Amino acid sequence: MTNEDQHNPFLKWAGGKRWLSPKLVPLIKNELKKSEGEYFEPFLGAGAIFFALNPHKATLSDINSNLIEVYFEIKRNWLAIVNEIKTWPVNEEYYYSIRELVPTTRFKRACRFLYLNRTCYGGLYRENQLGQFNVPYGGGRDHKALWEKKLLQHASIVLNNNVNLLCSDFEAVMHNSTDGDVVYCDPTYSTKKRKQFDRYGKTIFSWADQLRLAVAAEQAMDRGALVIVSNSSCFQLNNFYPRAYRIDLEKTKTIGNKAHSKSVHQESIYILDPKSRRKLWSKLGTIVNKKSTSSIASKARDNPDFIHEFLGLSI
Ligand SMILES: C[S@@+](CC[C@H](N)C(=O)[O-])C[C@H]1O[C@@H](n2cnc3c(N)ncnc32)[C@H](O)[C@@H]1O
Image 1 (cartoon, rainbow, N blue to C red):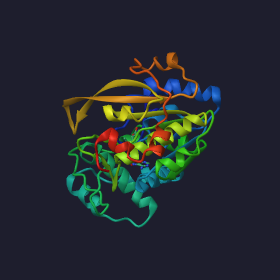
Image 2 (image 1 turned 180 degrees about the vertical axis):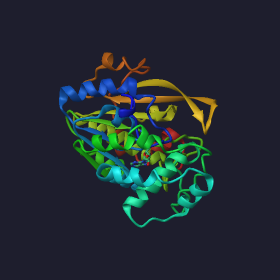
Image 3 (image 1 turned 45 degrees about the vertical axis):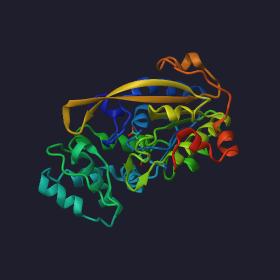
Image 4 (image 1 turned 90 degrees about the vertical axis):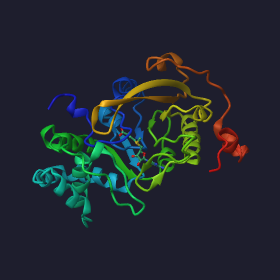
């Protein structure tokens, strides 16, 4: 196991933030060291930032109950999981036989989830309308890294280190953040064109959700928490974060299983810093905007048609 493996997530997850962690994690680490606050990650997915950070106290949550169940099982039972899934071969026939199962225990559901996650096409998580996982076979990816690189063992150690796990919508969780805490939000993307874009299970992250997030982020900042929101670059979203510093970053993405097939993706990071430290955040990249004092929370409260005016959408 290399030092890097110790900090890697055990899941493959669309939109995972391993690429961002070398830049962002040292800044968050420093912040938490000074404030001794709690780390919140309310859109957990594979938790790339969390695992790289290994904070002294954290609340982790996601709306996907199957996902959170896996974290619970790894936290208390990683070795039994490894002993079970080590015996599962990787081939197309076996993959589909596991995909068809409807396990009735948490342990078996966690084993199935991990096996499918590692061996499916592109490491995607997608469900049909009935909530059934429906990603096809990946054609050769295997799940050995889970024990050979000790990904589950390490995850269990980190998760047993003062970590509170919740299955929840982000808003309720963010309301618990306070002075000195750091909240990192990485929601499912939305684009104006497709209106409701990414699906993670049965959930769609709508523009109304994006607005709820922006309001919750601002409120958390006003309680003294540092809030960092990642999002796909999209000019409409910039209007949702008038009091944030914005940094635009580029990420090269591999499409599906093909290493040679790549696309460039623009990501915006919104930083809501109660201490307004522009110089500090410019270490992450060029800050491309001027912060304003107008509040999104009061705009949304005072004008119910606000979202339509900004986006020209019916939601
Ligand atoms: C882009 S992924 C997060 C990826 C993560 N940062 C990583 O490194 O793997 C977005 C996550 O948000 C979750 N999600 C979507 N809607 C949500 C909501 N309303 N509340 C909480 N979590 C939500 C999805 O289940 C998904 O796991």
